[in-house]
Image (cartoon, rainbow, N blue to C red):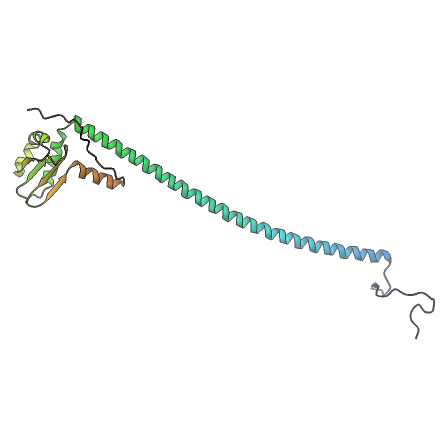
Length: 212
């Protein structure tokens, strides 16, 4: 059986692509197809590469956003802690200043204890009996003179008590007790502000004596 090419002595190439017309493509057409295939492969590779790059970019952005969010949150916490610390320091300084002012007030106006004694006696129940106002011995003249009207109205008497700090008093009766000492009033004021600063009444404070 004869094969193509046996009659003219030439051998036809095997497996070479053919055109739509059924003829073998020319060398230019064959190269064009190769270039076209190469270009398609390049485009596919480029698209895959760009897709992978975009995926990497999104992953990086997501990670960076998360890290930035963490840093911002940490900064906010540190700022809030610093702000709270500064506020605490300012409040404590204000309390210490107020304590110093009160001590100076005690020195300059020792007679103010009489007003405090009046308020304490007024706070006692009206039905109470045997009302006794305990004050520091050196404050007794101020209270006896400055609060004489309310003491007489309530039938109360003033009792010297060296355990009471100057500037404060305690009112006792058969019904109740009113603690108006400086230490107690100061502690309540500090507790309301959340600043635990003790009164620490100085032993060297020089409060004027009542004039006879």
